[in-house]
Length: 144
Image (tube, rainbow, N blue to C red; front, side):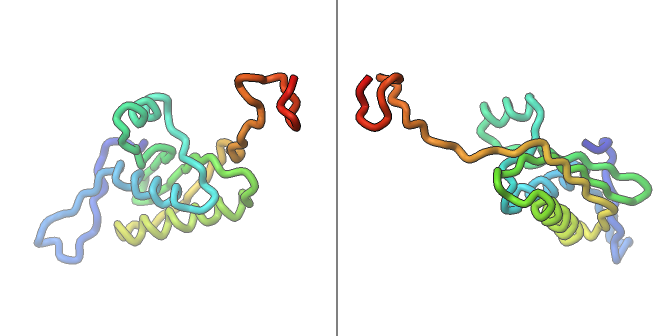
């Protein structure tokens, strides 16, 4: 998470006032952009964010994103889990492109870098062919 300072956007007409953007807004934008890429299973979150999500049933969109804002440059670190069987470089490149595009489109800020950290690969769920009432049965005829 970036420091608690707001980012002041450049306005075309400064007489109207200034526009301040909270850093967690950028984290949410990047989190949503990254999670919508095909091949991303989920974003990495902390234990507390997972518990909050579980009990409040409210999705925390900024999890798995770390923002650094220094010298008017935005740098994102994106932490993801990917689906098994996807091309890691292809998905990572698409995450970089989506985060950069969405951040620029929604705020007008240039992104300096987007670092993608693949934390793991999630295999597809498989259904068990074992009957829980008779775990030692033959798979073909169902008898022990």
